[in-house]
Image 1 (cartoon, rainbow, N blue to C red):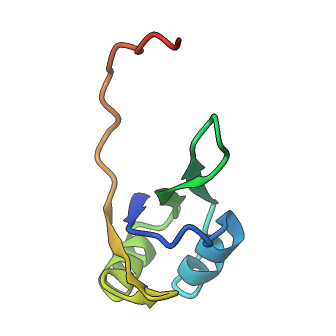
Image 2 (image 1 turned 120 degrees about the vertical axis):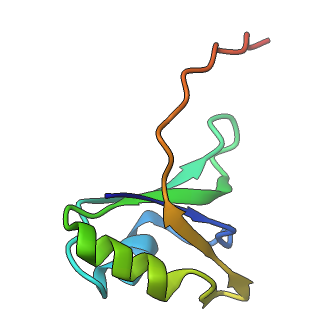
Length: 89
């Protein structure tokens, strides 16, 4: 199950995400998305959990939970859309 995590504090790391979701079961990957130019977090990330039931429980328990003063948003990730690449200048 691929899970979207939004409204993350900029201080949250991949390891922090893995720890929070690990409370509910096995985490196969956890990554915070960062800006490719600055390296700074974009405030969202993705967590993959191989067990559907554990993923659903994590979503239920973590959606709206406060982390470092921010209420995070957690839901099942939508499939990635094919979008044309923007030219970089």
